[in-house]
Figure 1: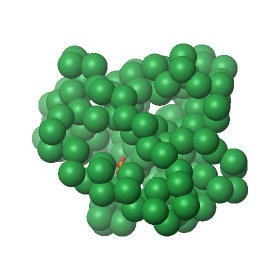
Figure 2: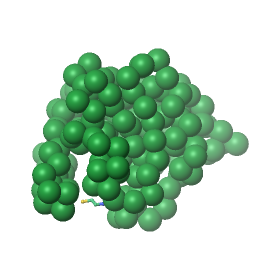
Figure 3: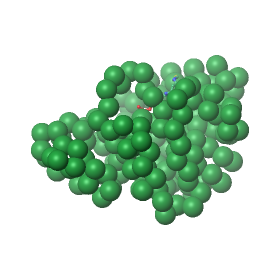
Figure 4: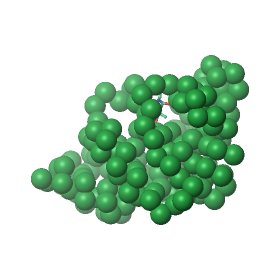
Length: 159
Ligand code: PNS
């Protein structure tokens, strides 16, 4: 099956990478798709920067493809003939919003399923917003993000 792993990836973290790697072992093709999250008003990285970082960190996984889509996830799913949506679940506080999105996407698309991968405990507290916040106060985030992302963060925040 061909699946999509959607997200805003601002920036991509080890938590994202773990879900991508595990999904790549389960499914024929994993399409990592950068989409806009309407509840996030500003971003640290541009779409192009995020796509490039994603491409760099998944470059060694042959059945993973990186994409950007300026629209609804369910329209991307329909256009690309995707079989299911993959999301990671880190902790109970993720659940409400994830359930709402999964149900809305299933209802509006006429049946697309969302499958959840439980975050590895070593990654369950990592979020892009936490990475952005610590990095913006000069803290190192090397334990949370892959090397190419770390370099981009340092470039952006330190100059
Ligand atoms: O990494 P995030 O910010 O948790 O990802 C959320 C994302 C981008 C997957 C979600 O906001 C999304 O699907 N955006 C695309 C627009 C869309 O389909 N909205 C309806 C969601 S129910």
